[in-house]
Length: 542
Ligand code: GLN
Image (cartoon, rainbow, N blue to C red; front, side, top):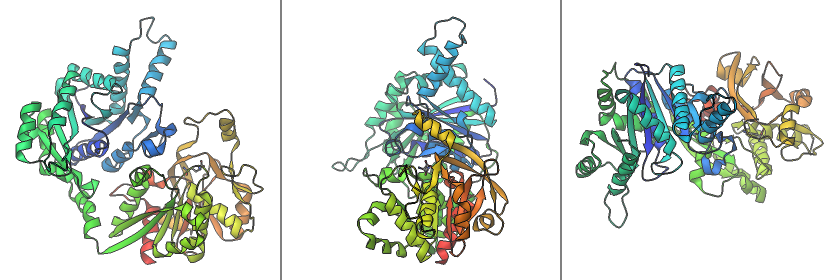
């Protein structure tokens, strides 16, 4: 193991869904703020090869990397907190690890030896962790192991961490992220589940260097001392992580407890500075701003509730926040179920009470006519409109129907036999669909886009050509380009290699922009995305 690299494994205890991803990202952030290079890796214990085939309601957003990998939403938190660009090397699943080992075996890569779950699977995990670390030239690699300790699924990943620690104990550390419930009938924070989680981790041969205690409130001294004694860690190595109003406050919460100092001490390192000022300022705009902007996100509603709904669009929500804060405004976000407009068109008038409307990406047929009527309302009433991916495709469908008079125009995703397939499927995709090849076969990752002079897009980006990340199967049909342009919808962005339409916008409208790509993936708290910024700016002027 190279002397320069240090590894921090973050594992979960007690229960999932306590914000292990944000904790991991914040641990990386505070180390970065002390002058070190940090990268992060997400280990997803699922057998799926990537997150592209997982149900977004169960698994959350599919975060797309520049190199076109379909990964877990936590990768988005890492990119946003660390202001860095990650690749497919930073993401692994059980399926992916096994696939490599099995392929290597088939190619006689193990030279006739018996290939075994241990050590060959953890060895492949370790090789991947090291490769990503070398690639990022990272002083620190924070590795988040998905799930909670004690599950079958993540044992081999814990084993990989244990083996790395055995080989180089000074440079490998473990952090347990646990949860301390406060049962209503007791009104008191309970430490027992965390004690059990620590024991379970111990039985995998791993002892935590730190325990991060999530909970509704700050942890008090008696509980810190109790955990110290029962879990065999120093009181100062028990870190409290209470619920806060914004995830961007968490680095400050950690630093108040001296977390990065303690980590660096254990690694025998001296900090090279400390810089969280700009970050903390950004994190407080929501509470301090005098202006406020009200945005409606219109889409199909996931019946399982708001929690999963917002998880499925986490990058869009975060990008909206970054852009609002950069405009010195707080943001009020509301979800509108497009199916409401299908049942009752009178409800469309409620869109006038918002400063702007965003239609995010999506798939399938449910709620689509509702989205199309919302687009029409925003176009005709001059409400700032931002359409992303499906939101762009449906904006062209609406324009074709209402303005070009092609009343049956549609995307072939919804109406395969439409007379006017303004959104169609290109031949390479046709083959994938016919052969049921759905895994990793969409148009994925970063593509170039040239911008037309004098357009909203060109002005927002301040550059003639850009690169954005994609994830879709269908495309704008270039047979309709001149027809829409004649009637005032401008194609303001085109992929120079393929001629595919990437951005459309309207001339006589304060802000009506549709993008085929997913700009939300590149928005960072301190570097908000230019199109989101322009959208919010125009919404604030409404
Ligand atoms: N369903 C559309 C397509 O596959 C849009 C995808 C998206 O919005 N991400 O092209």
